[in-house]
Amino acid sequence: MEHGTHCPIAFGLNHFGDRWTLLIIRDLLFKGKRQYREFLEGGEGIATAVLADRLKKLETTGIITATAGEGRGNPWYYSLTPRGKDLLPVMLEMILWSAKHDPRTAAPSSFVSKTRKALTSKERKALFAELLKDLP
Image (cartoon, rainbow, N blue to C red; front, side):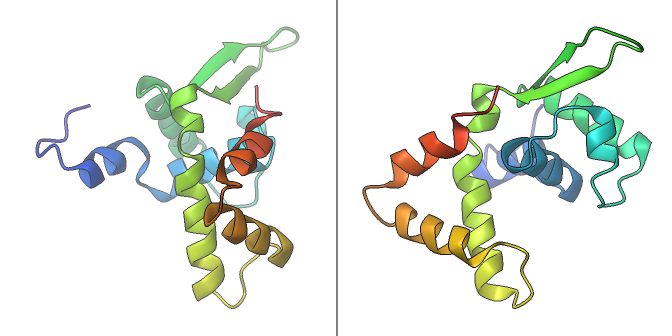
């Protein structure tokens, strides 16, 4: 995907820079969702056409992989690639920023405190390893 300026912000935005794409990445990283139906029923109100488009875009840009399942209807399972897992620090920083500026944030205060402390200390790598350990 060409973005023209080679600006790192523009590059990132072209790969993961819209609401729905970031929410799909969130669901894969933190909520254990892996199937189309799970993303669709996530409570955010994403339209089926938008979901299909964003999943395809994420797959095309190498952020996720799609694997056909077995069974009735052959459901697809989505998982983050190493490139997608590299977005963990970005997502954590977004959570911290939102927790600071949104008084009604849904982020648990214990998670925010633990993450804030780990990101500003030598525990950063351990936190990333813990959060990524159960991902496929």
